[in-house]
Image (cartoon, rainbow, N blue to C red; front, side, top):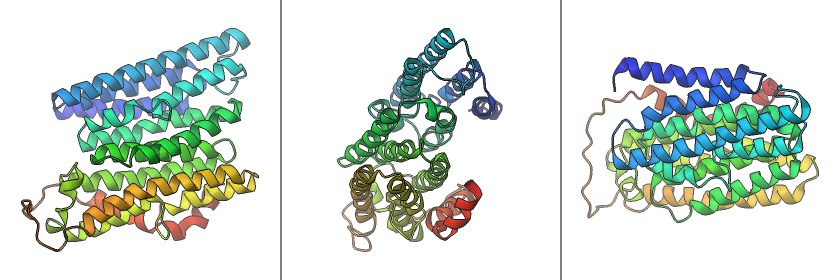
Length: 348
């Protein structure tokens, strides 16, 4: 892709998200979300592969549907209350419709069906943008309007997403689909706590972005998208193979890795809010998710390495990819747990 076109598209992505962050009138966040969708569409279709074009079409249709629902919800709210401000979402019909549209935007269950299919058709870097940057604007809107939305709806979306995210990833062999289900599960954790402690949603989002970026950049460096090729990566880069196993366990939420921090704080807050049953359900869904991360770790570090293999072992060639972002994200994904008190103090 032409670097000028790429720069324009990436700056449009930044512009759309910033516009959504900064707006208080309903039309501006809608416009920001539309700019975001239109900017990422050429990035998704740039390889002209049938799978990429199919993924782009699916993504565009779901995002256009969600944007139309947002516009309809805001118009309904303005019609009923005479108010266009984001913070004045007092109509229950409009707030439910709006929350459903944003859930479709970020791929919360049961509106998640597009997410694994779309991510499977993309290359890893575009998939990384879709899994991280594209979640920011809708989540900012959800945080702003969460207090006006029915608490039962938010709780059901959170539990269902965590459950579907764990359940759906169990039988997958494609790494991009596994990361898509991982994303759905993490979004569930963020939504479940958003009405009680929005700052914990921000912490969960930050750690999710760090861990997902580390996972995607690792797969990009190893040039692998399937589980069976993951098993032979130890011969290509033994150190990266061992750190990747730890990043996957961090995504699963095991202590003493970074991924444990948001889960621990969210379960603690749910217990403080006198919701022990919901906290127990969320902890059990985290166990389901942990199973497929452990399966990936087992495939990667315990099945073939360092024994001989029947498949062709990849050459340990010099890579031209820059490794600084990968190193930074992996270090953050593994070692931020001791910083928990500092992070809590900064966010509360």
